[in-house]
Image (tube, rainbow, N blue to C red; front, side, top):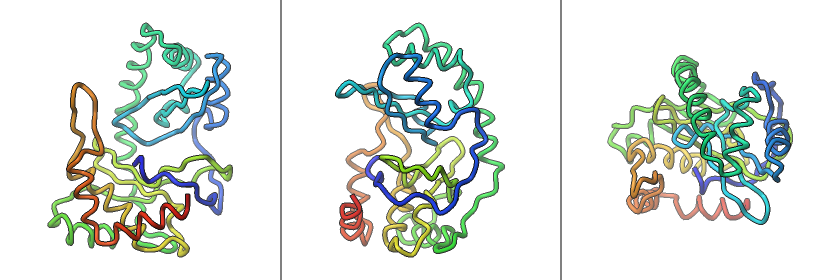
Length: 233
């Protein structure tokens, strides 16, 4: 969710990440291998496993969390990719293909956690489904995992994985200081992704189409939600 990225307080507790790297060490490793300044964001986005864009001498990299467990051969290929060398793409594609199956199975079989300390996602989902989607959305919904105590520049508040048909909501929203209508808006936004799916135009994937934006504004508290979001920024 591109628009739902706002700086929020760090989680109340820290859980260990079961991967070979954490985001900070992976960022340092990629910077060392590529010789470039790296601004790294780890995502659960399965529609775009790896993307990069250069700006002001820094490469902003977004990659799926499966790369946290990648070995040096793969990371060297990623560094080559960041340098614009196409011959490394095969190594990256093979790694993604090899790990996508286990990632999907883990997502399907992992228990969905809907009850939080402040909000219950299953109730919000059911209400949004009834009011806006005629109960046709079949996606599962869960609170995501807590992350590091370190502050990050951007935080993804919601995501939808089409392969596992699961919506994940950032647990940073599970607090009374976040208004219910904003949590509902994030859930509604991700349910729109589940309803409209990903479209392609000129070979490029499009998530937020004109139809998506029109329907997004049909959310009853759209104006309040956007105003609250801007206030947090």
